[in-house]
Length: 116
Length: 110
Image 1 (cartoon, chains in turn blue, cyan):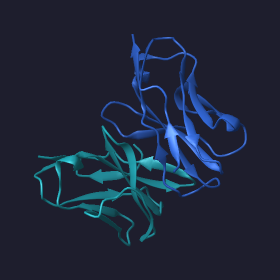
Image 2 (image 1 turned 60 degrees about the vertical axis):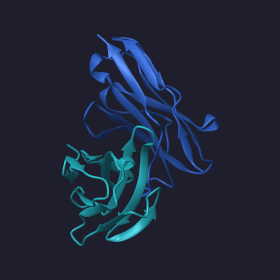
Image 3 (image 1 turned 180 degrees about the vertical axis):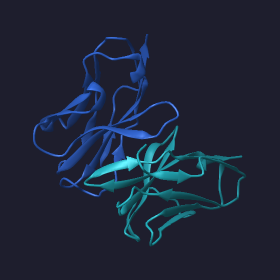
Image 4 (image 1 turned 45 degrees about the vertical axis):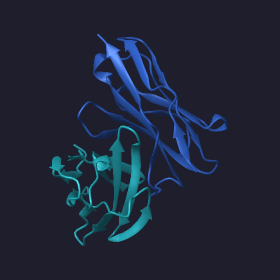
């Protein structure tokens, strides 16, 4: 069955540190990849997405992610985190071409705590 | 604000009861998805509707059902509730492959 793995359950960083959150998926066909963020008490917000093309995608709030097809990975990065980035981050995948209406399969999430 | 609305925000009910959660998608979005978020299971897909018809089913219990109405709003019905059904229930709507999530309904079963 298709699955998404996020290796870090909880990451604690100081402000201005660099961030990389790992995400691997298990599906050999065409996939669309997403990172969502959930701030405390809020709903999921789309940070960035990859459908096709340039494997380095830029999202909101200075986040970016790199799709490495050979490694089935879609890691999230940010050069310098801020206290306001404290949240839970979810990697998700659905199958199919761009614009697929398929449901999302989510990883377990990574909690990021940024110390001021 | 994603444009997806869900009511109620919070629901507290007893075991064995039945509740209905409501979702209104973003204007023009035909697909509605329901997800359950719990501490032990994480975010799990329950069911999808597209323009009034069931499109896909995930890990949805037989005690749960959903429907999408002609005005495209959707309702998730949860019956014979158990303590383990306590969770956040999100709906999402989609256009162009991106899913936009509502604020969720927090269900507490006591």
